[in-house]
Image (tube, rainbow, N blue to C red; front, side, top):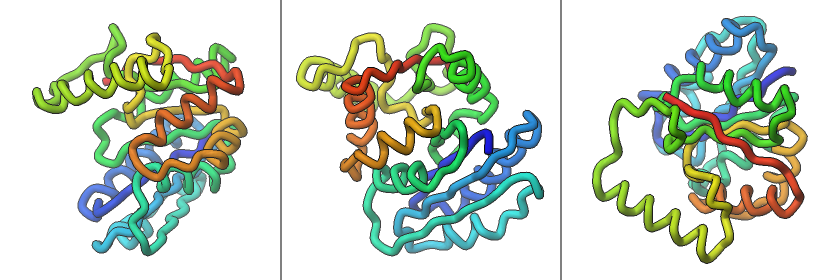
Length: 208
């Protein structure tokens, strides 16, 4: 298995089919033996059913994991990563805010051993941002970035810790997420800090 794609989802019945189709098309177009793991984080709508209904090509494995209680994005990503089997593993936010084609940059970095973890970064100088976040989101983002740098010691060179498009060498992903305990949005920071403590290298790549 070349690549595992984890898609955490909560109340995404109207979007998830498009995400699964796009992930499958990406794997097939790039001749990657892969699996798609949709993790339904306790949705009350038909997210899981909509994901299971998608017909994927024969070379792509689709695994839909659902649990009843809503636990948070961190729990969803962790569940998918631990269940993954790929040589490389990634997670992508539902909604296709970042097209899957961008993953080729991160995958190349991992394959060439430039890093152990590759983060998509909306703040990368080469990133192409077609729609800026609202002002209040940008203010909150800057405040959050300042806090995690000064209080938690996140390296300054990591420009976008919260981007929902991250890739890992598979064994490292499974190791780090098995140790992670954060169920909410702070899971990104916990994984980064655990990776740094273990000496794993984190690189960034531009996204659209």
